[in-house]
Image (tube, rainbow, N blue to C red; front, side, top):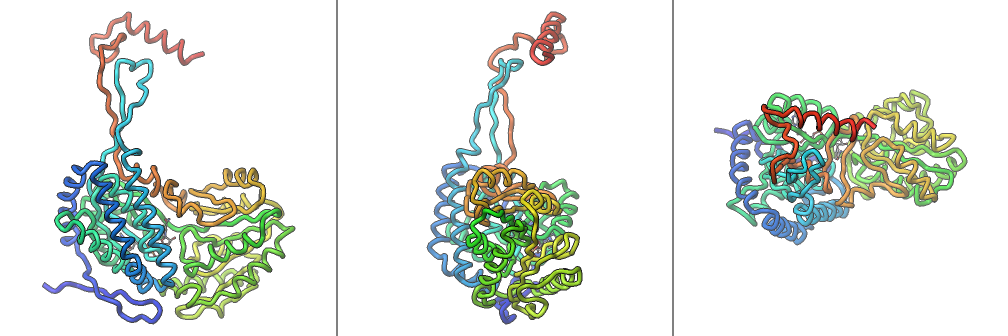
Length: 486
Ligand code: NAD
């Protein structure tokens, strides 16, 4: 039997890096079955045993971080330092998940309440079994590890389908696990294109953790619906940065450059829109343009990892200009086949495609607003709701605006701040998806809550019997009024 193969390419020059098998239904099924056996062993390790294994896994990744960073850099085209930063972040999360799973998920008592005072009530969390993880290419380690680390720590085995653009990162991870525990395939990888991901959704896994575009999430959800397989969806964004008139404009401009152009703008929680209060608009824009003008594609950030995204970026710039926007840095000429130089657009109408859709390229839109209230309103007008940021010297104001932004996360006076805080959940609302990875919420996302009552003594009022006494019912009805009708 010939195995169908696909190549992973270096997006800098399309050199073939390696070939990988396209896993079909049978291969995916086989991996899930092996995962099911491994999941039983993994569950038996208990919190303590899993913590030891995961910390060993963490040490093995950290010790070999440079080699992993090189794989990430080759497959995505991002600078190797950026790739190493990704490894650092992923390792922090793995460490946190390993150390906090027991505290978060061990069985704990809850108050049974007056009516059930004869019961000892507790809630525990059970692993689902096998979790299928489908990953994107933009942060091919950090992003899927946000699901993998937490799902493993919660006691599940993993079958990971990396993006077809970054299969080597997935294979590296699975091989690292295998080098530690060859007989226990708790973390396996299946390589392939979208169809392999669809096969994983249909394979009988107990949950799917999907990270990728909103359009694909809808297909994944439809496939999962066939078998009522639950899923968590981490999708795209159109994050807004709000700059108040009292903001530290140098800091805001620095963060805007990093959030907008870092990784060539291919960051789900990157900055795409900036709303600046009128009094400081010109000054902020000047600072931003100066900083962005110093970036060099190919050094400051890599090429577009997904070639076809270039057309989307070009399309958004063209649409914005046609809709009346001004390019204050770069423009359509900034887009070449692989690399895109920084583009800053101003005065982009709110209904322009560039404003409404995820651009996922090194393009920043900077629009003037009369005040923060309008900035909040415009930021919230997006169908996406992943994250957002606000810059102001007043902490109270920062908190107040943060509370008004309808997103999964907000940073005050920085961007992407939550990504490195392992205790914080990550996820969005609306078209940005649902469910949460990272933190205690991430551990629970990969666990089934299990309710338990243990009867300590017969209920003084026995209402759960077919031989209910009139007296008990009369007292219960009186109690209802006394406790809740006042
Ligand atoms: P994508 O949707 O094209 O692909 C994601 C994954 O889905 C890939 O592994 C792909 O092979 C697989 N897939 C494709 N079709 C499938 C199908 N029918 N069934 C099952 N799986 C299928 O996304 P991408 O281009 O790899 O990633 C970029 C997107 O990811 C951007 O929109 C970005 O904002 C988003 N993203 C979100 C987060 C987050 O945490 N919210 C993080 C990183 C990236």
